[in-house]
Length: 88
Image (cartoon, rainbow, N blue to C red; front, side):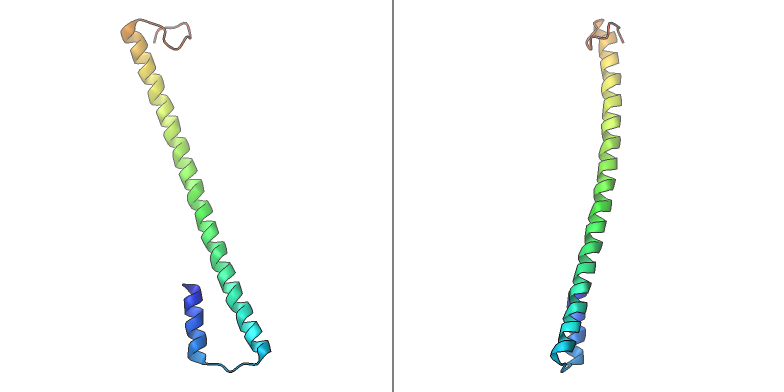
C-alpha cells in the first residue's frame, strides 16, 4: 500500500530528473518497502507471541481438567489409574 502511494506521488510530480535524482528516488522507494516489511514482520512476531501465550494457557487448563477427571475416575472406580499409589 505504501509502495502504491509512493508511485502515485511520483506520477503526479511527473519529474524529469537526472539519473542521480532517479537513483535517490528509487533509494527512497526501496527504503519505504523495507520499512513496510520490517513493520509487517514485527506484527507477525507479536501475533505469534500472543498465540503461543494463549496455547500455553490452554495447555495448562487442559492439564488441570485432565487431573480433575483422573481423580474423579479413580474415586468412582476405586482403582489407582495413574500409578501414584493413591485413589483420588
